Image 1 (tube, rainbow, N blue to C red):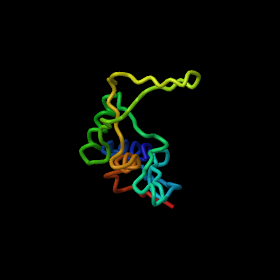
Image 2: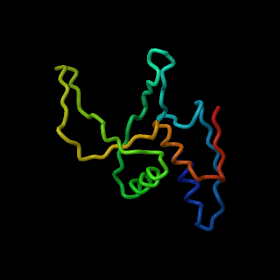
Image 3: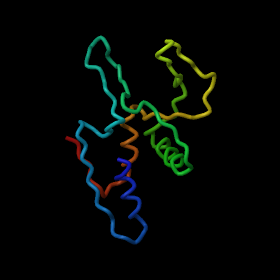
Image 4: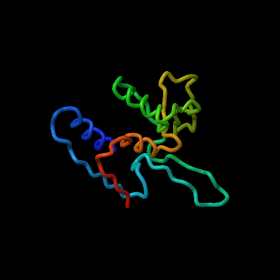
Length: 130
């Protein structure tokens, strides 16, 4: 999704012919490594796990600007209740920092929304799922 967006935006407004992009997704929907798995077990109704990339951070100015745009369209949201820490397998000890200076984001409502946000507005391109 990121490559499709970059190719499309590189050609817009540059005077060069548009780069026609077709994105094929092997899953049922967009997302790839940002896919969300949902439980089919009736006892676990509503359980969804963002297994590939549960969250991300934005460090560069350009990426922060893009995330702000996707936040405005509802594709991403700050993950304010994220718990971070490190686990030492040898000692079995979990260390939790008292605070994190980094703002983490998540797809809204699921991580696949990140990919949907990346291709949002790229009407000239074609995106297909199996």
